Image (cartoon, rainbow, N blue to C red; front, side, top):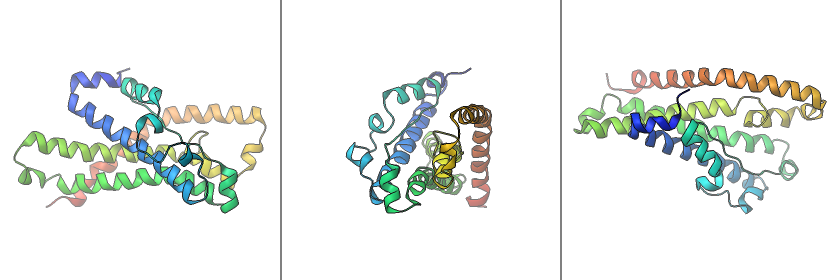
Length: 216
């Protein structure tokens, strides 16, 4: 298995771009969880300092280290579903969906600018290295946010998709612990199996951008 940190020797610029894109995307994802919860009456995350883009607050040191070494990371904000449900039965699902929605928005930004600039940039910027760096920023912004959006919407415990599902199917929480353990193990294996395919889908989506948005 290739460690992500080995990329710094192969292509330091790509390593830096991917790191900045992923860390920023996760932090913004968590920020909007916290911000949406606050708008819907739950100040738990806001009171604990999650209305920030500080990676140490939104991700934590261990998540950052794991990303730099292995290429995967996570973030989390505290939410009080009871307070949210007092405002609206849909509120917990809205808060859960706010993170993936943020990633979808970032994906659209990456998709548009990568596609729009793919053939125009050489005419705008003479320095080829600078032009390629700009394209790579938007390419990786689109790829990783498409991945994060799809990944987080999977109905697997610990992910936003699961929180949306259980908000409308609370009986899943009331299922026997042994049954849920079995389901969780199965879903985790499914998650591990599907990760590379989600990433391939994200790449294929970005491959469409130049044809749709570049000059003819």
